[in-house]
Image (cartoon, rainbow, N blue to C red; front, side, top):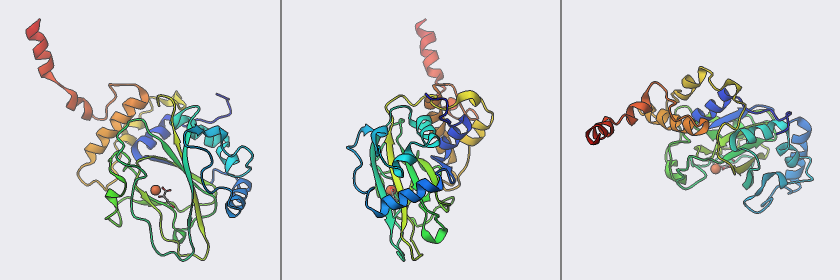
Length: 277
Ligand SMILES: O=C(O)CCC(=O)C(=O)O
Ligand SMILES: [Fe+2]
């Protein structure tokens, strides 16, 4: 991998495992954002950019907007850290919320129930300033491992801990494919855009980031984060995150406060072994 691709740190990856989301404010330079706005107005980012399953790096080869955004070293570093080299394009959407559109989307995930431990990521790119009244996407941090079917979560209007993306132009978020989210109303006089790109891994998602801080003591605390919305059920989510962290780090003994090890303690197995000895 070229040395100028800045990979994520272990602490950032732990935050992804806990929240299902990483946010990078004003990551994309202004000239690229402007070009993306031009491409959007010219209808150049509509429809499929390639068949699903195409190599991501083959997309938009001549574009100085969306193509240049995907080829920024920081964006490549985020993608490589989360899904690895040679990732695939799944699909993308150039979302518009028209001016004075007072209806929000229902809460949902972008998938049928998907229990794989391997995960896709979705980049959410905001090419222009998005104040609250313009309706940045609303996310529920920590919801990605509570596996539901698409609109199963559509009845509640608000969740404790929900986070609207209020941001400056060029902000990018990387989310786990099962994260709960919804578009918000746009109360301004201007069209609101957000470009989402879904990306699949082609390799085992293991230690793909900059692991120089692999044993950072913050990791356990980050994975034990309580987002509030699950009430007393926080241990379920923490156990799910421990499983994800074991998968990402290939460390089957990793634990947070003994929570998963306790569930795995099977003294009857050693009793049976002792008997047959
Ligand atoms: O427009 C938005 O903010 C969100 C749209 C959406 O649900 C999606 O991109 O999956
Ligand atoms: Fe969605």
